[in-house]
Amino acid sequence: MPTLATKSLLRSSDPLLEWIRRMTPQSKQILGASLLEIQRRKEFETQRTWTPTKPPHNDQLGFFECGVKEHAAFGGNRSGKTLVGLMKAIFLSIGEHPTLSKRFPPPVYGRIISTSWEQGIQAVILKQLFRICRRDQLKGRSWDTAYSERHHALSFENGSEIRFFSSEQTRSAFGGDKIHWFMADEHMPYDIYLENYMRLTDFDGIAWLTMSPELGLTWEYDKILNRAKDNPDKVKYWFFSTYDNPYLSQEVVKDIETVIGNDTARREAKLYGRFVSLAGLVYPMFNNNLNVREVTNVPASWPRVFAINPHKRQPTTYNAGAWSPDKELVIYQEGSFEPSQGGVPQLAAKIRAEFAGQKIWLWLGDEAEGGEGLNIFGERSVIEQLKRAGLPIYGTNQASDKTVDSGVWKVKEYLMLDPISKKPRLTISKSCPNTIREFNAWQYRKVTTVDEELGREKYQQVNKEYLDNVRYIVMAESMVATGNKLNYKGVQAYGN
Image 1 (cartoon, rainbow, N blue to C red):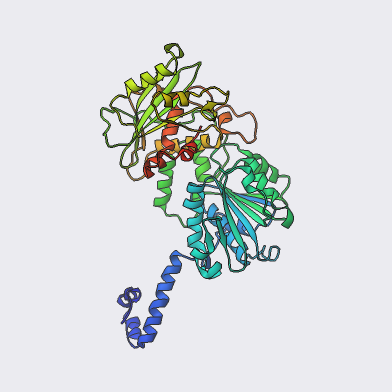
Image 2: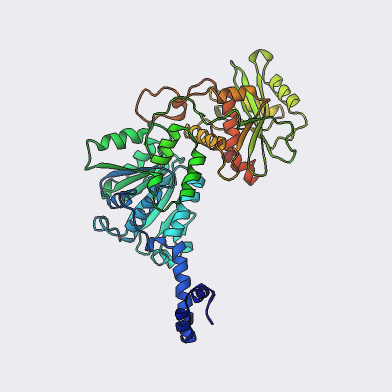
């Protein structure tokens, strides 16, 4: 009896049907199993059939075969940059790389570093590797036996190993190991890159980067692109365009264009992989006709998040937002508190009065805390005082500027039209005029140096008090989705 895998073939060709009818039952079983395996390999173990693209398409082949010390693929969304970087890692690990395996025979030890563990390593890197890798080359001939969640490592039958890291980790986490190669997927702080680079010394290893330069003229522009002009034997780079990926349909490309919008700098980075000096408005895609609406009633079932930006010598601002079941966010309330109005007890009383009757699901606050409820000056923090006044506010951690950039770009994505619903995911109530004003006014600082510029150096420090609150609320989406509002370490990850 023909298997399900053969039935589509049986309907399409009478001679083929007659040939299969004459087969023995055992032969039919073998044919069915073979067809199922072919279908599986179309979806998994794609390493077997992968062919790198060549000019006039994106030059994946040139990047794949490159062996200079540092090389980079600066690419648009879905341009194939991350895929070719991962294929390079796999072929090096199994000892079948056409130009590098003689130089680095197995066992080979490497690293892959991405921007974050959840959004980078788990959501992108590991999912792609799961589809790419041949199981017979993995340790134990299975993904389950080859990948260790505890050690964040993927092991191969020949002894090679790939370890996975997030650039959110401290610099000390990257020390120790001697490695043959590492792959940096998307922008990371230069000190993290340099720490990994130092691990290449013993094997005279190589490093490659795959990234969309969304954050302006970061260190990669100076240390990779500019340095390559004078050191072509040590540094090399490619630009990959979304439009030059032959495997993307026109419909997919149009969807990508819709999500990116008309922001010129954003289009250059996310479609062509080009570096652009960030200038002008931080949120040029904010549209008063699309992102502002009348909000008369927020359903009680929608989780509400409150965020406050306390100051001692200037007005303290706060906002509240609510999440719909479709993960759309509406900022429905704003407020401020002048220093002349009193201290923290008066601030707490004002907040309680304005939010009386509302069930706030999560309270967030921005303050540089020094531990044990004290601020960095050793004084009792405003957040701690608000807690004692009955408002269960969690701090948002001022320890890292990386979270500012990630938060800003996430807000940008929420402001854009969703390609399916044709609506933005973030809207502001007309009852929040100051928040709307800041969306229309906040600008990038004028770039004065071509170097690694962290978030607080890139943005103007005016016209953003309410926008900081919006950013905290947007970044709390994953907590709302998982219902995990009491994980203090999780809260700390959401920006400063």
